[in-house]
Length: 35
Image 1: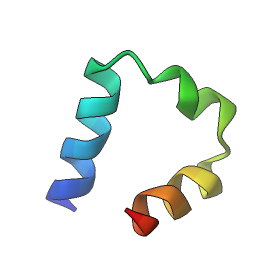
Image 2: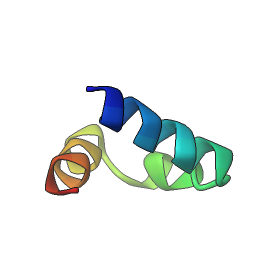
Image 3: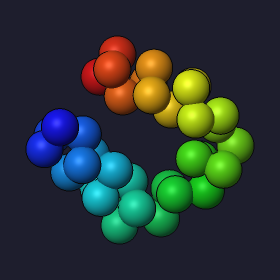
Image 4: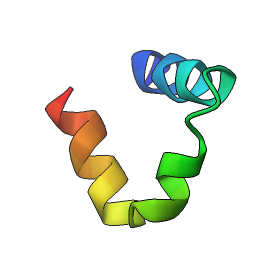
């Protein structure tokens, strides 16, 4: 879970948080699980 949280933080800091708005929650989860 820690790695996932850090991954989300990195995306947020990178200003790519907009991608999450385009992706559905399920899509985001699958992407994170896929690494």
